[in-house]
Image (tube, rainbow, N blue to C red):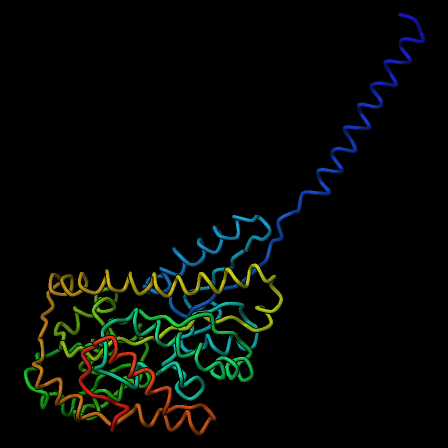
Length: 366
């Protein structure tokens, strides 16, 4: 091979090499790297709790799945459940001060700070449809944006959705109850506003968290507790309170998925949209799982040795009439805070009436 031919071959190889290098730079320039976004999610409760379990098994992977469709962003989740960042009742403040990015707030711990979210607590004996209750609360937030505005201004956070796992509150006792008079003089534990459900019957309400109910009853601190069938099975309340007094106090939306405002603002719009949309879907998924668990839990309660005592319609009416009109008190409190509490209450009850719910007491019409 002549020197001239060899030189031509070298020149061609160099051209090929340079074209290859330029192509690599072109490909790397056009390809957009996935941005990793770290987010800390919290709840004081462990995955034993149904709402935490559904959050871990549905919300987090569903956010990941939807973001993976574009490949622009990926969340690096720091899962801080079980009280590692915030203890019971402390999630709202942890989000407020930026100790976490997203959290599950238990609203009845904060009747003074975020009273609107307790609307289902102050309207007992209205509905057992947890999905309807949660959708209605979210609808009212859309109708009255000043509710969300107050949350941003006062607590530095954006509420993504309302949710609930309580299809209906019941009373679980360590003794059989045949007459409402038998509640007089007993001590019953619960959270926040639901303690008022038993005071009209002459019982004393004892504040406590779900994780404390078992010990409170087993040690004799209380004779019973306000809970729901799924929680009674999950926390083995049938061992210490084997009598479920089936009053059907109703569904309540006790959970809020909330995000620190600064964290919300710093993530890209695509991520904000996915976080919000999946939160709404989580609300509905949790309601569906609650419904699936509710009836099964009643059977399990009996299988584990529990007894269900169903109250008559007359007893339910008597119980309802023993209660103060908490809804009117709640509405007045909202009015004093600059929110249209009376109209919001009417809207809530109108929706329940239009949906044909088994309302025992029309709280807004008194």
